[in-house]
Length: 374
Ligand SMILES: Cc1ncc(COP(=O)(O)O)c(C=O)c1O
Image (cartoon, rainbow, N blue to C red; front, side):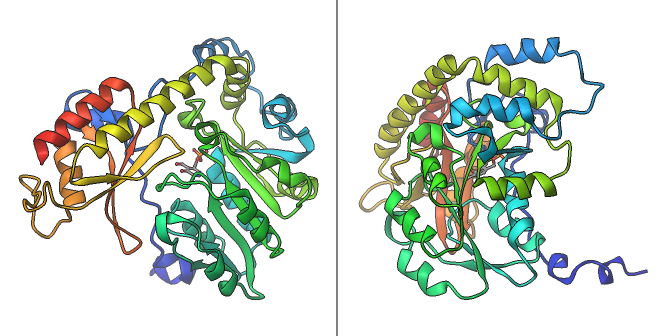
């Protein structure tokens, strides 16, 4: 029997999300500790209060609250809006999917501005929508005129990450308002908001078609527990509460969020350390002539490789194949030294590396390795 014949046609040929590998697998493969700078995770981990709270929680045998009452209420102060505007998801990934399920009919269009986060096109395809790519322009700014030209009666949703992954830049508030004025659903994904301190969350009060997504994966170091939230108009929030799976937030994630929110001051100190290290990493990367780091408002830095180590001497990372871009060769060379970063080699983003900000010792090891490679 041919199972493929039964698969939804749009999904059979779909390219999945290129996810990173977990630390345990990488360390097992390498047979040693690694420096993981490929997932924009928090190198300082979560609040110590999270471990104790998870150990003490007595109700793991009971289903969690389908209405997320304690969680949504606890988020009011942090998010700055009342709980009716808040819905939590199993990571902001789940909220991306839920929003698309809510708004898309087969063939409806979703505007995506690459290079950007890879889950927008994947979830659009899974939900039967059509991805309309409007590539970013100079300095990776969103191309507003081209987005407006791409709109038609089938356009339902526009995604913009701010700060954008992997480029690190933010969209100005006036452009968000321009997008919202098109009367499509505009999703501003603020997964890295805590590192930029720039948000459009309050605009949701005046603009019911604006959605702001956030996560605990980055600033609070809870990527492994899968917990994000969104800020929606009350109307959209009510629909999402209706269509989501009842127990989408597991009890441990809820406990971890409450513990994190009781320790925000400490977590903010960690954020400050990461932001300071981002600036130091940027300076150190800029000293390498063959790398061009882009300014970032997030916890990672994108670099393009100009493949020259000096005005006349081409940089050839040793041991690579000629068919590979310098970025991929450098990525491979770093891996061999136990340092994991991400490389990009697509039409929208050629010959680039994205490096997550680690601890100062990670920066030092990375720079040393880069100097050895090229
Ligand atoms: C822009 C952006 N949005 C969303 C996510 C997913 O976050 P979560 O872990 O909450 O699913 C990521 C993760 O890297 C991201 O970069």
